[in-house]
Image 1 (spheres, rainbow, N blue to C red):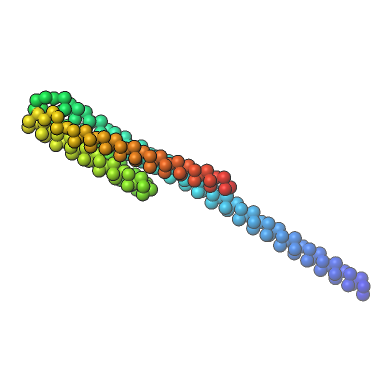
Image 2: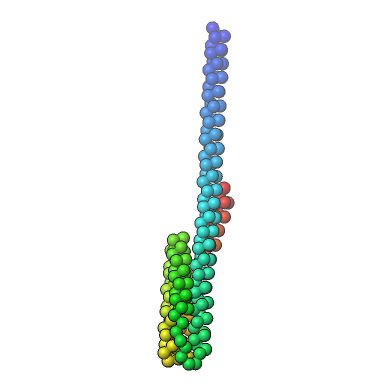
Length: 193
């Protein structure tokens, strides 16, 4: 009888040991899978941050290029008009071309506004508004020059141009902050792994 009891206890101990080993192995596997899942989620977040930063940077650069193209042509027209002392005939083709380039800049601004964030979207809108005032001011100056050759009435246009340059610096600062912030955020996620 003692042999039977020892055998039963032995079998039960083996069964309980196997069950405990299986339980511990299952818990370890669950922890490993959970850690792997967190790692994958962090990798996706880092990749998404990288993708987002690249899209924003591309949008910001396209916007600045479109603004620059419009501003250079607009400035060129203004300087030519200001250098003239007598009435200059109104170049409607050139003014229309500047207006089309401005529309391209507006379209590029919409992409910036979609890519965000809000601070950069607001700065982009302010920048477009300032460029609109500048383009309008040069057009009005061209129309006035065609009529009576106003060579020194361009001070207002010059001031608007200086405000446009200040607005560009504000936009660049905000855009750079956002791009730097997304890099720092990506590094924090990467280090969290």
